[in-house]
Each structure stands twice: as C-alpha cells, then as structure tokens.
Figure 1 (tube, rainbow, N blue to C red):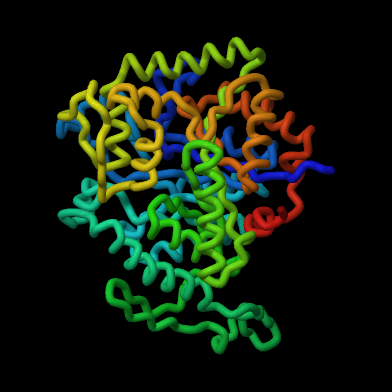
Figure 2: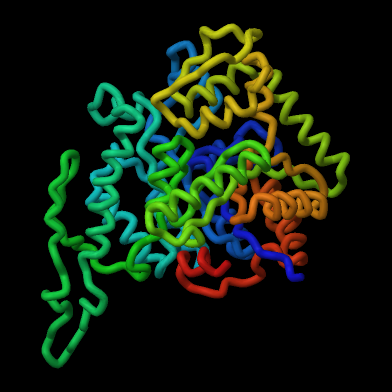
Length: 437
C-alpha cells in the first residue's frame, strides 16, 4: 500500500537575529537588517516543496526575568524583531509556490488594517498569502499600545470572533467578477459588486468595503495556535492550519481528534483544517553525531538555565526568577500564551524547575526526532501513522544555512523517496496545496 503523504511547513521564530552565538551562523549579527538568510531559507523550502513558512512574531522586548530587559537584550533573545508583513513581502517576491504566513496580533492591528495587509500579501504572491492569527500573550506588548494589560485570555477569543467576522467580511466585500476591465464602456469595476459590510460589534466596527480589491484566494489561509479550550474551539471554527504542540504521540492524537471533533461541531469538514505538529529534528550523517548534537542541546540548556527560564517566561508571561530552581514545578497559570505553558508543564512532570527548563529547551517539541535522515524519516512516519496526520512544522533553535541544509538536503529527500512528502507542487494557491492530501 502506498504511503500516505503528510505536509511540511516551517515555523520561523521571528524575523530577527537567529542563533547569532551558535556555530556556522556567519555574520548574521552584522547582516540582520536585510533578511538574506531568510530569503535563502524560503528558496530552499520551495525547492523542498514545503507548504508554507509561518513567521512567528512578538511586538515587545522581554522583561520577564528579574523585571529587567538585560538578559533579553544582552543575548538577543527574540530581539531585534522587524515587522513580519514587510519580511513576508520580500519572501513572496523570492518564491513562486511557497505559502507565506506572517503573524499579526489582534490587539495591535485594527481588523481593517489586517484585512488590507493580508489581502495585499495574497495579491502580490498570487494566492499564497496567509495570516497567523494571535490574540497576544504579554501585558508588555499591550503597554506598547497604550493599554495597561491584555484582556483576560478567554475574553480575547470573544473579541477575536468579532475581529475575524470583520476580516472575512472585508475579504468578501468584492464579489467574483467585480473587476470587469471593459475598455469599450470604459468600466474597470462593476460598482454593484463591491459592498460595505457595516459591521457594528461590541469591540470592533468597520464600514468597508476593502479598498485594496479582491484576493486571488477569495479568503486567505488562516493559521492559529489553539492550545487552550477556547483556542482549540476558535481554531476548529476558523483555521485552515493549526500550530500544535502537545508532547508525545498519545497527546498529539488526542489533540488532533479533539480539534477535528470541534470542527464537525462547527459545521466544517475536519479535513479542511490541517494540524501541523512542531518538530525540531536533529539530522546528521551518523547516529552518533546526531546523538552528540542532541546531548549538546541539553548541556547548553543546563549551563544557561536562567536564559532558558527567561525565554519560557517571555512566552508564558511568567517571571521565574523568584522561584526555587530545585523545587518541583508545581501549579502554574497565566493570562499569556497557554499552549506554551501547557507544553512546558507537560515536559515537567515530577521534575524540579531546573530540570524542567533543561528538558523543555533540549527536547524536540512534540516528538524527539534524532538521527540519520533515514532514522528521522522513520520516526516522523511512525508518528504520523499513529496520530493520523496531518504533518509537521519544522522549528530549529539555530537557523543557519548549515542547519537548514540538514533538513532540505538531508531529511526531505528521504521523506520524498518514501512518498511521505510531495516532490512537486500541484497547485498555485496555498489553500489548494494544503487540501491536496
């Protein structure tokens, strides 16, 4: 029986200096203002027939360690970061088939602006644009926009319902065939096919129509990371692809089953929502070399526990600097990024905070994929077989031309040989490639 193919995408951790202190990263600390590394990355991804790149983003500088920015600035942790929609446009110009999906926060961009940015990206990429919808996770980011704090987590999703309705309404404000371009009648646009949306909600309002015109995709691809109950429900209702981070095969399967059931409850075909699991493969020529590199991640984490906890705190909105490193992790709650906290807690069972930070920073997200291209391909294939689909989001802590090559020139050819990932794009539009299998 032929192998069932799965999807590959790339989770790029922000348009910023990547792993500048790691080996083989070149002069990225001097060259970071122009994203040449990222443009090389997307060209290589397209050569390997990935579905899309998701540009993760934050809109603040961390201060979640000793109430100071020092550790974040000194070590270049998630800073500097550039506006992802600008980098996305450059990526779109450097590619012809790869989907380009920047992150835009609902609290930082008015829905009309988001609809216009994403719609324009879809236009200039000829149907390959998308939007990673996030509601925000840090009060520090809210304070950059004049708010004392973010709304409560579940309230943010209530607000996001209105936000999404406005965006979808604006993208649909141009009927198919609105641009007639009739030279005889000197009519470019049929005005009867362009409509206001006149949306008046509790939190947002917009008149419309969208002045940037219709989208090649009609509606762009929506990505979302649903970790909480409300997040999963929202993703199941609206997302075309979901960023998932449950730890272990059983949790991955349960997560996928849960989201698909929610999609059915929302009246959707669950196959229209592709769930991609975060994976950080360590691929090397020999198993011994791969295991040495894996051990090196743990060694580096153990030597820099404060940095690792600061980074965890950055995403979870928790300052761990006052916690006892050698006490059990205990109960943790947050108004921040709940899927990140859930992943940290899942890896911390029975561990001290120190041990949990090391494990969280050195393990490979949903599964540990370590070895030769053949071995890692087998590990990924077995995981997909047990989980049921739909694919993986590759995320590397040390993005460089060398590390990218281990994936696109080492791992992917092995996956293609087995019929597990595509060898060529069948469609021009991102959504059609996602729905291909």
